Length: 170
Image (cartoon, rainbow, N blue to C red; front, side, top):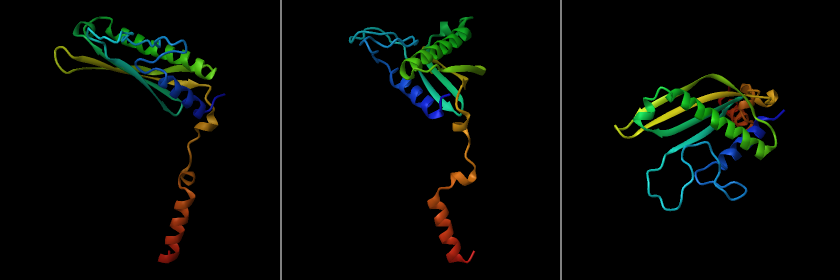
């Protein structure tokens, strides 16, 4: 059973190895599931802007995806399923990289439905923001215990409060 700290370190390393232009251990471009493939030093055409981020909230892994889309893609009947597939591909990539980094398996179960938001800046520039939440299974429950009020107040603050009580006659 993994602790929250171990899982957070593994996920953090996955993100550190997934930036645009990252190389794998063989010196080849990282194989992220994003649309923005690899390219030469000389950029001659329009590049796709997309990326993903990960966050942890208790035993939940939240995947955020943002990408540029065309109006044609936005009005496609498969737009929602394509976006959901992108989130699934990102999760598959994260699990694969997590296994490489930590040697452990990251087991996740979807929680709810994906949230998909399409925004437009003009008739040409449009982008999608999608988010999916997953419950991480096999996380050490003891490390997720929420501290009670007493544990939140540090010793120095308690000592400071005691000083005030003595001088004010409380």
